[in-house]
Image (cartoon, rainbow, N blue to C red; front, side):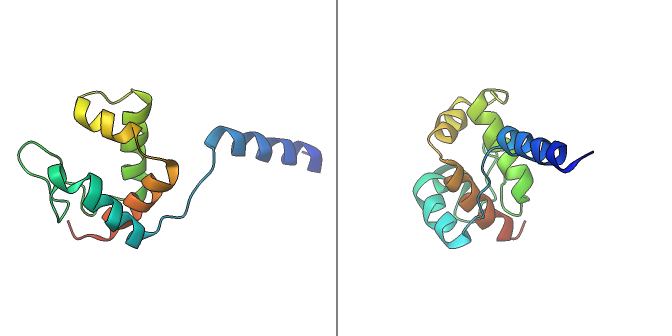
Length: 103
């Protein structure tokens, strides 16, 4: 592959994957207190009706939220509605916060 082909491939991959945000766990905590604790609890461990998200990896958290946002995960309408309100930066911040919490 020549340099132009590699550059074109890298550019295409960047467009497909979209922007990536480094999460800020402190900002994520503030967002969690406003949007997540009612269902997932202060500790992110959930309950009988709501999944535990404490200790979830950034990749798994981001994947789950993205699936709720794009409609491929539909088992919880309330979660889908909440997820659609989140920006990519919100998701990154929340993922960073919940990844730091103990399971």
